[in-house]
Length: 273
Image (cartoon, rainbow, N blue to C red; front, side, top):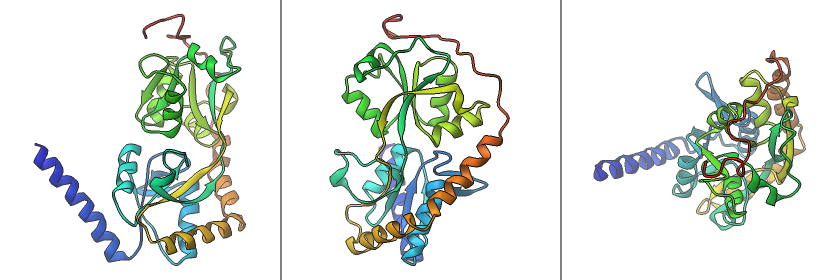
């Protein structure tokens, strides 16, 4: 069994290299995180996707974009020379693992609660130990919360993707949820809700999303892409893409204001869950 798994992985990477060599265009990995980057009608689209395509177009290249669950995407770019990944948070742990291009899209990441949950009081990071927060596997913010002392067996509920994370939150199984102004608005709209139903309680990150390159990627190409990004940031591409993907969310009919059925209101109230 192990032999077959190793062979499948080898063939997968050989396939990537052959595609890249044949097209002379770079392989770029991403994940499903609407509206930033996601698959629609068989094509990978989204705010950051538009930006990334524009950046590569500036240097005469067309990226070959592949979308996988985040953990696989992350491992793929680490082990594929010449490849890229977006969007990724730039952290101290990752600094030397990649060559960085960006930020390409500025955002503010918060912990949110439902507006109806006035019982949740978070004035400082230590207060998070009194509540449960639903997070996503492999994300930088998930690691940050763990480093702050929150445990996956107590204060954190770890999910595989944004859709699963939102389901947990809507069912009242978690007090808090991670997200930013783009991903939260889209996830809420897709379930018939809207941003006025949630309240940000703690700002966790406002450094922006990056495009990053495998550390063995041609440094000259990386520098050209950095210059291209600087140009793109001044051309209105970012603002146009945000408007294109975010304005339709305001037209989606919403359900009545969500009433949270709290299964687990706090860590202290339900020890061991």
